[in-house]
Image 1 (cartoon, rainbow, N blue to C red):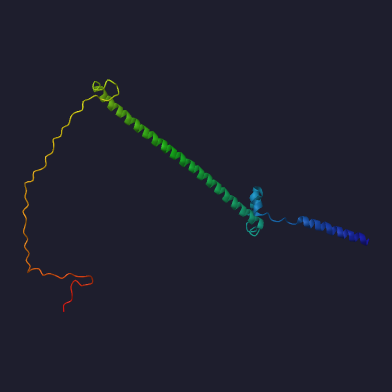
Image 2 (image 1 turned 90 degrees about the horizontal axis):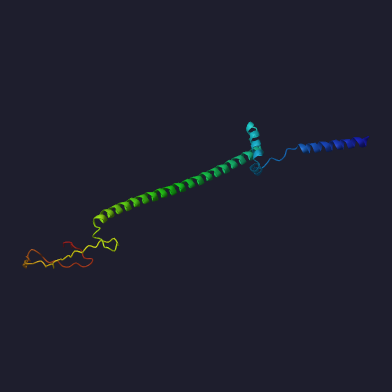
Length: 190
């Protein structure tokens, strides 16, 4: 019976070892796994948020929180890029609309000017119909007036300039010697 008891003890030990190895906790999921699997991330975050104090040191909860923060940043960047693209499209549309409005306004001004010019020309065309050339080119056939300008005459100069005599009082002025570079303008009295 010794052998039977020993075999039973070994079998029980093997079964217990197999059960113990099957009951071991799996390794905590990594940040990358949570980035790829949104359902797992949301499930772990729900479990971790029920008891925050107990899960502060849990590696899996920390990885899920980091992954959730990274996904939120990615979503915010994508939203901001979409808003920037939408804003750029709106700016381009506004510029195009402003250019079309400006062009339409310029065309209206040009059309008004052309109508005004045509009305002005029509007013004169009716009264001067006889003065126009029979060829129909629209230019008036009016004689050119002659302009005569008399020859200019130079002005008469009757004024005479009398020379003036200037007298100098040599006693009032005394000659000063020329100064050379480095000489003083007022030499010290000796």
